[in-house]
Amino acid sequence: MVSKEYFGENKEVEFKQEIPSKHEKFLKDIIAFANTSGGKSIIGIVDETKEVVGIGDQSPFKLSDSISSMISDSCTPLIETDIYPQSVEGKTVLVVEVFPGKHRPYYLANKTKEDTSYVRVNGTSRPADSVTLKELELEGANLSYDSMQEIGVEFDENKALELCRVVKEIALSNCETEDEKLAVKDMTIGKLEDMGLLCRSGRNLAPTHAFSLMTDNHSRFAKIQCALFKGNDRDIFIDKKEFEGPIYEQLSDAFQFILKHINIGAEVDGLYSKNVYELPIKSIRELVANAVIHRSYLAESKIQVSIFDDRIEVVSPGMLYGGMDIATMKTGRSKCRNQAIADIFQYMHIVEAWGTGIPRVITSCKQYGLQEPVFEEFGDGIKATVYRLQATKASDKRQKQATSDKNKRQAEKIIGKDKTAENKEVIVAYITAQGNAKTSEIAEHIGLSQPRVRAILSELAAEGIVEAEGESRARYYKIR
Image (tube, rainbow, N blue to C red; front, side):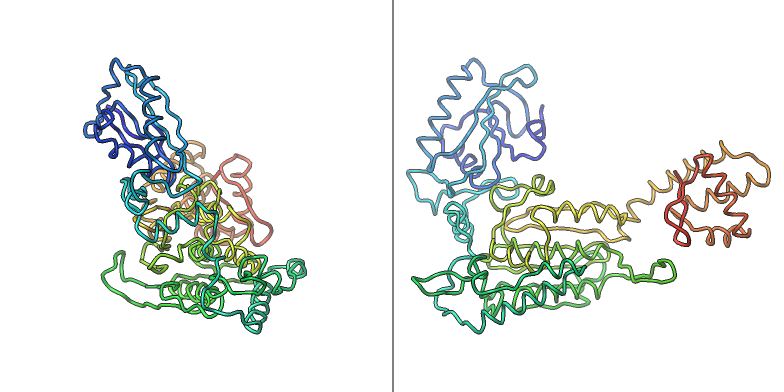
């Protein structure tokens, strides 16, 4: 027996005992792989039992030529494949690897594309619905929906100039330094055209879908729904809002909704204290911004932001774009479905350089001591889940206890039994339990003066048991 992960942990894989007599069943998966993120069909493994039976006495090279001819004769446009034999458990199987296609949609040549343009959804191959098919057609033609003309709407110069003013104002407000502000150039009607928010209809300017989404936005589905739930499921609403209007305003409103419903504390920085949220809020905003930028505006559904006791979920309509898969996305590689919206959001400093968003979210959650975020494709959407601190504490409880016990045993082995050694032991146990601690906190806990505690900490640091981080009053100690 062999698992599908054997042929690539992040790959779509289908097992076939043999080529079905009805070739369409086999070609269905080949087409679906080409229309989404690629995949592999393995000939010579029983799907139900995962038993490796091999291809028997058949020549792998003749079988490879036969399959290659079948695909090229039956499918259109031409699907790019790599077919090769592989030895598994002492038997030869044939791997048909299909690469993500660039000339979508792919379908059966002797039938309509409406009926046989298959896609992969939740590990199965199914016909593309009308919205997905339209997305595939735009992708194959290298067109971006948001940059296409908004039919029936005329160019309004005053509205365009107002948009120029607003986006520059937002860009300046999002700058963190004076140098960044100086680098923000004026937005002009010409730049809106260059970005794809305006286009030409003959010699005249015309608004695109992106322009409409950034201004009036009368789209029924281009909205963000936010909800706060009681507990960890969707049974009881505590608060819910639906935001409409220009998509940049929706993003701001949704972000404020999140801030309203997550925990906030205070952190002392020198002589001052500052508010600190339980989650990396820049990364949370970027997740919602990514949903706005990368969603399918053809899909008849809305972005959803759901806040639970243990997590926040952001659901964006539309399958992954351009042959991307989750694993590739997490490495920082990016393909943009809505280039005009992406460009104007980058100008406004809402998002940073392309491809950095998801890796930065993962890194920032790790720095906050949170569980790694989860990204998953389901049905016709993408869901990003960020876990809150209480969920992370629950999952890490046993691990922290084990680490604490280990550090205590290590401390007992190193530290002697005289009075100073006893104080060292108490200090080590306290730092272990807290994760880190300042001199004043340790002194209050152990009942010694701060100079005496500093002397003991210096000894512990010299012995390699603790280490100091930070300067002066902000200095704290942690276990090495």
